[in-house]
Image (cartoon, rainbow, N blue to C red):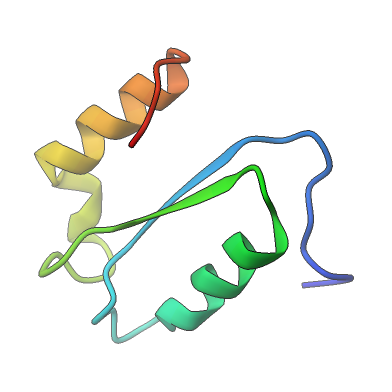
Length: 71
């Protein structure tokens, strides 16, 4: 990633399993720390790709995309 990874004006929602064995969780945490408009949602026990099929993650992503508040 070039620069500090910030995306001026963009709202970003990141889903990440803290135990993901392919992509370090700390990278997502660092991105969120550098971007005030970014949110990190921890989704446990889904791994790297199964997160795409997690009902809670899907519901929150759809709500976010429709402009609803995300906790």
